[in-house]
Image (cartoon, rainbow, N blue to C red; front, side, top):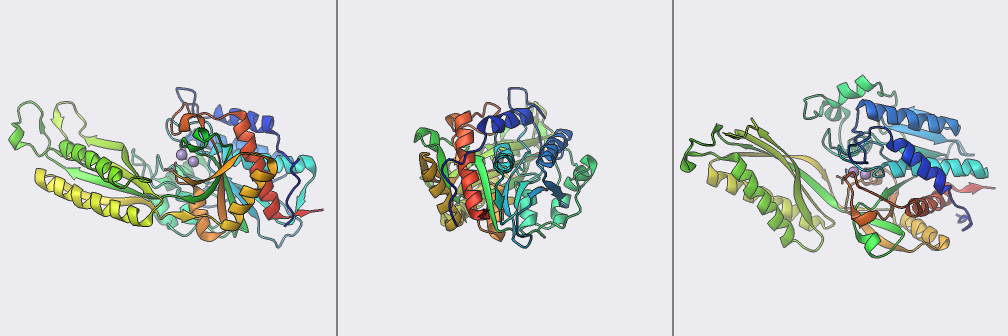
Length: 416
Ligand code: HGY
Ligand code: MN
Ligand code: MN
């Protein structure tokens, strides 16, 4: 395929204005966003995205997981579309750019194509995946997982949030249950543009991350059962202390991850004590261990070690222990041809770049199971993400979108 001329660029100011406009929906308390999946704020963000797409002459399809597909027609109706996707849902204390940059960056590519009157053989479809974050309903990347055949839609609809509300009911409540069968769409290729969410690109002073792989992940949800008792009058030797067991397991997870350096992480972001009263020893503790590494061998070894040692810790304290894997994907290798187009676009455009492995999980990880897929990354300030202070520069945002523009045009085949 002929590569586009190096002078083709997106409208960076327009992209930035869209990002700031979307950031007004579901504001956080510290400058970021709390636009969690299937909330009213999520629905409002979806409507704004739909309006912007329709202004560009795109047609909107929605599937039964609520995922949105905005299509710009190609010249060959038989040609499979090139998809550009990411997510508009955020963490409870999320930033303005995680996921949103990829959806609105895709829309900016279409707007630039419209400005320049560019026609392509393959249609372009900009996608907003439902529940990428997995913050409210585990696991993460739920809708793209159903699309890729990893989860059934019944499993997805039954997932519950901490208040016991189900995914299916909440999707119905906000009025975003579409009519398309999930996964019926076929892709010619899939691109995802995303902030790095780590410190490497900024530290190496690179504008573009050429993403070759994504590390694998396990989310292991532990349920520890102790005995509720008075924190004051219960002698230490009579305690069945699930809280202590949890603390020792967290320390052990840190130790296991450190023993697998370099290139392995492990930690806990969420835990629930029951009854969660200051002067009652917890009868139940529920928490999710998140472990990740690009190495399949390390990933499996870490999971086995953590589950074995957690059982030993609990046995020693007389605490009940059960574990359920509530999230998983193996390390992902992205499509070398598409990765080469991203690298070639960065070079053609004169942007500094380096190959990176994605530390965070993305919908691209599941898209890669059903189509050639890859990612493009831009730096973020201090590598910070999943924090309301998440920040990027306008220059970084538009440089990455220029690379997306070129890689997509090369794949969708410009028609003169
Ligand atoms: O967990 C992740 O890596 C992503 O942010 N959902
Ligand atoms: Mn994301
Ligand atoms: Mn995220």
